[in-house]
Amino acid sequence: MDTTLEGLIELLQDVKEDVDYETCTTLIDDHVLDSFDILSIISTLNDAYDISIPAAEIVPENFNSAASLLAMVERLIDED
Image 1 (cartoon, rainbow, N blue to C red):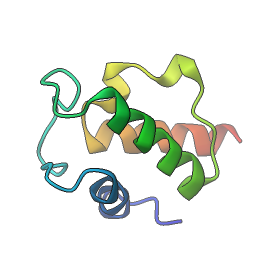
Image 2 (cartoon, one colour):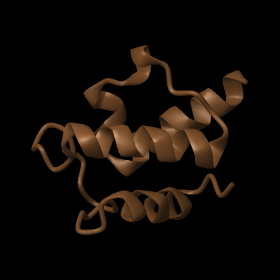
Image 3 (cartoon, rainbow, N blue to C red):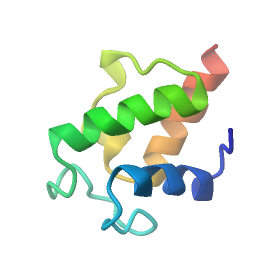
Image 4 (tube, helix red, strand yellow):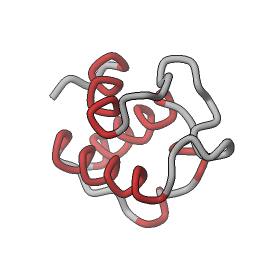
């Protein structure tokens, strides 16, 4: 799977398309994403990158921006 920021943003736009993932760094803090969106993102990332996002990683810091999501994905891929 494409582990670039652009590839991740494409996946995120499939989950919720009306969000500016390229520049927004407060997706959670400003309630841009709701709990259903977060669950959908977790499921999408698990499937797309063949990872399992543990509960300990489901914190606002990892979900506030596409860049922080990508860093988490890369960390989980490296741990495998």
